[in-house]
Length: 269
Ligand code: IPD
Ligand code: CA
Image (tube, rainbow, N blue to C red):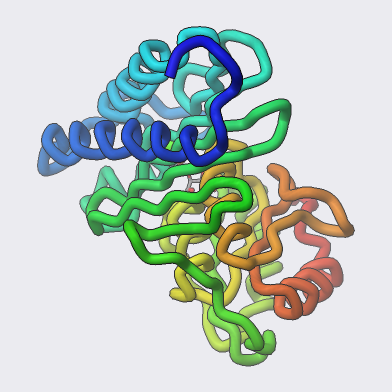
């Protein structure tokens, strides 16, 4: 896929899926019974394993080979390169689950052209599920086209969410949760934002919200949810962003949004 005009979103999705599949295969093969923590980041509970780095290296290498001029933003390696096409990579979203052997962690690869995410692949490796989406092309789990749940009122909605690594942020997230939990069907916390967004797409939860995810956590999954019919955004008309990512079918999105606004979820303690 080197040289020439910018490829179509579908071609980027195929390449992103191939790369996410290969990185997932490597991780599955190399994961030991208890992977070793090699570094902590924003807090002592925000961990990195050697395999986070190895997976990102593999992903970067495959991007470099296929698309040598493209920029990359990766969770472990930061920003490299420049230009219109940028790959957004989370080598392991759900690193704590990876560490403990829980089944919800994913390789997340998205492609942005001129600032818009046009393709994404989320490989939820332990479940053997590869989600893909491209702009205008729908969201897919293997060969199955995905549609999010519609017509679910907030009072019957199963809502996924997550928590950050900083204690101060968690205090507020707990307060917000206390306002949400009594008025919904129930809450799920999977430990992978990318997988949560794919769960919205697949109708396994009705909605998702989280304060504090990074771009690499939600770039690919956000497109998967949107292409499955979900509205994906932030608060007060903003696009989804590190302050807030919200995803649900239209109708439920607005109900959840309006509830969250009353709880002032973007503050820190
Ligand atoms: C984390 C996961 C988690 C979310 C955190 C993220 P990481 O990503 O997506 O579900 O609640 O906000 O930081 O650290 O496992 O890549
Ligand atoms: Ca990660």
